[in-house]
Amino acid sequence: MVFLEAEMSSNVLLSPEHLTPQGLLLRKSIITRLFEDIANKKASKEHGYFIAITSLNSIGEGRVRTLTGDVLFPVNFMCLTQKPTKGEVLTGIVDKILKHGLFLKSGPIDNIFISEKLTGEYKYVPGENPVFLSEKQGKLEKGVSVRFKVVGFRWMEAERHFQLLGSLAGDFLGPI
Image (tube, helix red, strand yellow):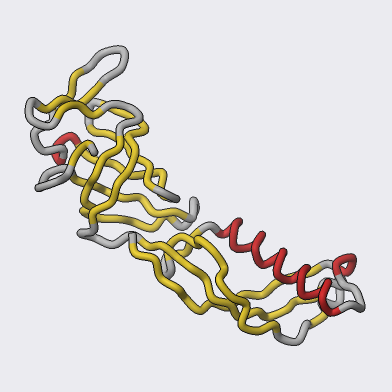
């Protein structure tokens, strides 16, 4: 996947117990809360998966919420992101094998499906530990590293992640 550095903005909400007269501790509390917020969001449709905050550009003037006493700080920062694109070649690890295809995991993406129709020469072999076999390229079983091509993807808002559809049909694709 391609790594991109994106300029982002967010509002960080701090409760009164995190507010201190020392500016350095206040800045530390804002940064800690920003890390927590980004980790909870996990990804966005526009930017992809959030990997790391690379720099904090600015912290705006805090606004006090009258009912709770919490303070809302507007923050601008740079974030390293990773977003899947159609046509790119990735590596993943086989997680689950079913009659209709296999599921892979690759980095932050844990929902990659390769249909049995897109496995190329591989044929499904049922059993206690099902596999996909190919005379030329070997077998695909749970735990095997696989190089695959992204055929399509979809953003799932409720789960805040991408679902990918992959293919093993093509040159240099398959087990590594």
